[in-house]
Length: 391
Ligand SMILES: *Cc1c(COP(=O)(O)O)cnc(C)c1O
Image 1 (cartoon, rainbow, N blue to C red):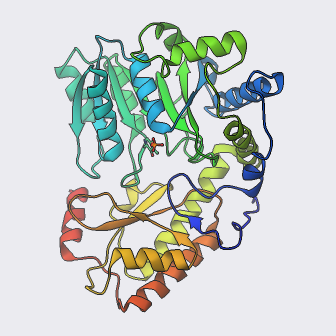
Image 2 (cartoon, protein in one colour):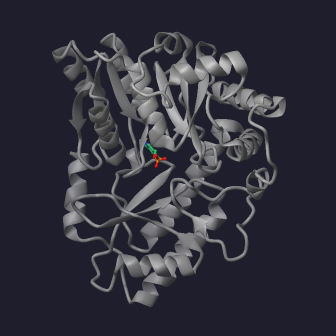
Image 3 (cartoon, rainbow, N blue to C red):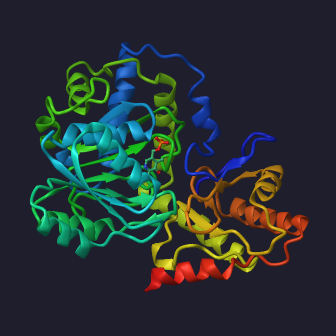
């Protein structure tokens, strides 16, 4: 197991889905300036792209990596704008904020889309996708969210990919909060392109994201984009020709990311990273349940990325106070994003291991007792809401 170093004294752990707690050596890699045109930095860009493609595993030869400046949403927009033809149509599978943001992006792009909105946390299923695709031959692409970070649900991308392929359409995946910790192997899941960013499961610092796309799709994307700076084909073609990014690259962020990639490899790649996060989640969820907290999602849909808990029914519980108390004890948690009931989220990703997660549970226990909350059980309405999931 790799050693996890505590953050600097007084610096809280970020139990958030990115930016997240990074390794000391990842931060330290930024203490040097790089010339964007220089051979050294071009070699760093090359190494980063190669490592990311290799992370796909079997079938990765058909893919190439195109980094894009900006946060993850810039990459989603770049992917939609570059791979969906102007006369194409996208089936957007939404079950949370990120799916809805993708639909909003399609609106901005002025390209056709069909939104399947499953609400806060129900997964879009393969048979639903098959039915919609059969009914609407105009749909050319399907957009799936791998892990919908707003609830933490792990969406069934394999069955979505199967339904998409069976209908002869193309799959685009927002794997922002999953890639690097969960498999996305082209030999098992057929997809045209996916996007992720530096500051999630690979544990880099924020500043850019990347698309991993089939080379034939990259070639076909020429002239499709609505945007100069978000044109994935143009960025790719320029990088292939010159080894450079088209516009100012986030040099320090790339240097940090390379160090994060090396740590990722040393931990055992996707399998090793996924195993640590899974252990983080299991230890944390078990401890929180022991305090009376309940998860929004049934076991089957829980991701090892982030977990949503219902707020306790006890009137002495107040989220803002709980947040402050947790922060005092060294942990930044995340507010919930559900519409029906109050909730909060605890991330399992970043430079943290199960020992840290045990301390998270202890901190939650102490915070509850300081607030005078005897039991963290959720209100009945929350449990009724959750029961719908099992139905
Ligand atoms: C983080 C994330 C994004 C991108 O969000 P930014 O704030 O733009 O980085 C997109 N989709 C998912 C599923 C995410 O988790």
